[in-house]
Image 1 (tube, rainbow, N blue to C red):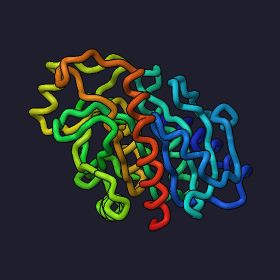
Image 2 (cartoon, rainbow, N blue to C red):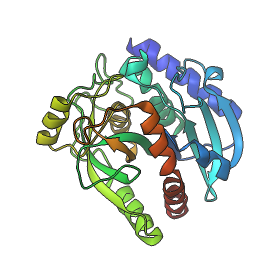
Image 3 (cartoon, rainbow, N blue to C red):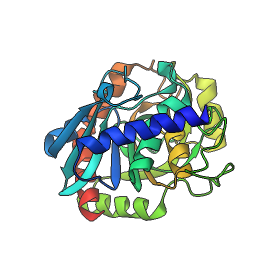
Image 4 (cartoon, helix red, strand yellow):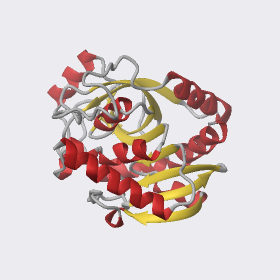
Length: 274
């Protein structure tokens, strides 16, 4: 798989190069509820995912499926409107394909946002959490198979997947805006079903503060590629068994939209400092 995969990465990156005059050094991935951010940027180029060779298609409500080149707080950046998930039927290699393309283009910073269920009871729905580490025990590694030597080593260290410098800059931005920002560990589950109360109790014992169905595979691929990683979760609901209420995607979207104002303001301030 290695040679065809690298060929696909090269073809996708070369196509993107033909569409833009300048390559940004940062890629921002918009999770559920952050789509409105794109109304506040200066869009220079908009490329549908289906136009990019070998790019998957996003099938999740709230994920538009477009790559933007835009100015956010006057900083040129790629913006991914929607991402790809294992639960959609994609392999982790397919779901992280865009990460490899970004690395091939010369991107240095990968900034990800997501919707997550809160396990730590000190965090309330619609609040934000910057990820300090993850638990990816249920994640099929995107590095499985032949190693992509031009990106990174066979056995990459995972001690510091999430960049402390970027986290500190985000915390500084949140403090200036008086936006509450928690720090915590994000646990990955495959989905698309929500976790059971027993699974949430187990993840809590393991040290997880929030749980979701994205981000970890992308962070692994990004760190393997030498990218600096920052990831922020919007806590959209209490995880299964904590509130006693059934979970729904409608609740997730409602609380993601409720936090949208703070999320957008935080990203604008952060990008002004980046």
